[in-house]
Image (cartoon, rainbow, N blue to C red):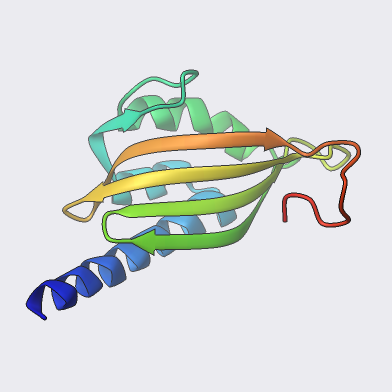
Length: 133
């Protein structure tokens, strides 16, 4: 019983962290504020186009998140223990079809320590009327 309670507490704590991180990062676009509050300095980045470390992420992401044409719409947030996933609809400009992005994070001691992502462009044609979202 104690293990279940501890796991539930960890999930609840991490859900609060990820929810506020997502609000600051994707919605308010406060890249530095979000990363300094919630990301460990030695953050591990699995996206092959970005370097490791909090400062590398801030440097790489700030231009994109500063562009008013870019839009980021959070569709789902899932947290279980030390892992979190954020499903996002991203458009580089208003005319673009955009992409479905799934960002996965691992947390340790209240900080995001690791990130993976999957990026899937929205196709021109789909076999169903509700692709991606």
